[in-house]
Length: 131
Image (tube, rainbow, N blue to C red):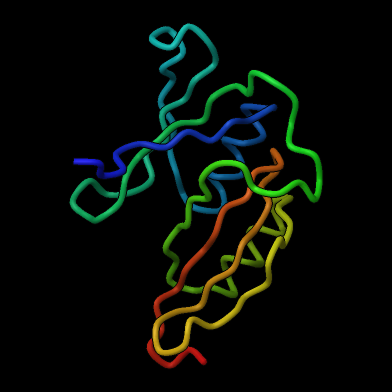
């Protein structure tokens, strides 16, 4: 037991966040607000036959994170096929670079970004030639 089965991204502006994650990563959303009793959209992140999990966007219940604040929680990392194109897409849709692309030697390219809601997330492109 203890396997990660769901995630939640806390957001200030639900439509802006849905646009960001939908446009950058191709996620789709289902309105589960009536179940949650607050703005809550299930995030379908990919094909159910591939590894990965689904999650949700939830209306933030407190203040947004302050810029430069240390991470207090979990950072989710998303697998991508083309790191540089994904980074450009993130930035073009209002995201910002938090920690630039770096090599995990012999394994992958990794980096961290800030979404339109001030949350940190990572992207990861497998590449055995990374160095």
